[in-house]
Length: 279
DNA sequence: CTGTGGTCCTGTATGC
DNA sequence: TGCATACAGGACCACA
Image 1 (spheres, rainbow, N blue to C red):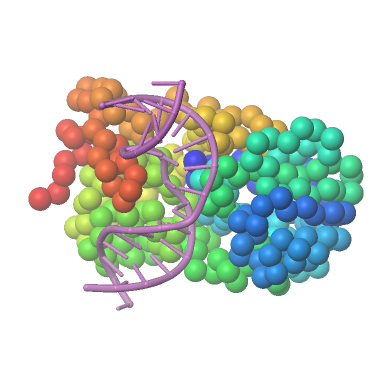
Image 2 (cartoon, rainbow, N blue to C red; image 1 turned 90 degrees about the horizontal axis):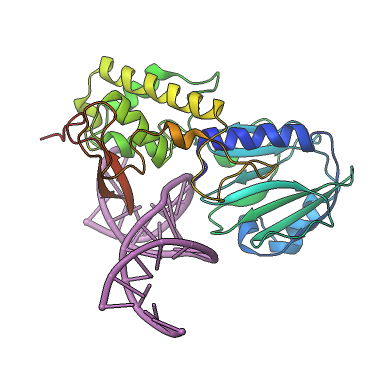
């Protein structure tokens, strides 16, 4: 499940492999990944062909691949999106959705099983695509303002997990790293934002930034083949997880079994002793 | 305005 | 063996 560390790993791989290359041909094999682009498959193919990539950029979980003409290709990996760098004659992976044949003879491929992700042309989006102007800066960016995030969280009655997952509050966190962050900070996921002190929220967000940075250092987290970098390699942060996916296993601090609870059509993992439920 | 919960998608694992 | 169901969950959107 690509969150900030996984998306940044992909961005680094793209920077190495596509910067300066020109798109010679585009082939979209499925309409859904280009659904946000006006004109569908044919429009997407025609509008992207001939463009030259500059250095890929990222905000939170969004990637954009600027072109040297001021436009950009906006990309989101969703749940299962991957960029892969191949030779055109390489066999296709099962869920290959879009092909970009590049001027250096390589082929950039967008592969996506569940197709929650997508690609679109962002007109004038090289600096910051207007489509993602509402996405807040992420904790690893220079624009990140932690005091502003703390203030925003304290204005809300919502639970801390929902707030951290809201990309308009702070971007980059997904289900895995929120659970890890809250476990480290010993805060229950349903604790209302306004019931947390400035100091406590500062601790939560400090842990969050650390978790994201550590996971990036490890190349991200992979449970299966759904997240890999552009070379098809997996990260190894899974072994660093203390809460996520550890239902029934002992808390690494106190030994109590980690609990899984349904939350927003997914799961929350936490230690019932270290992370006391709010009243 | 804020807050909440449904929905889109496919593949794998599990249960009867 | 075969079919049904649960689960994985990021972002958006309808609605209270």
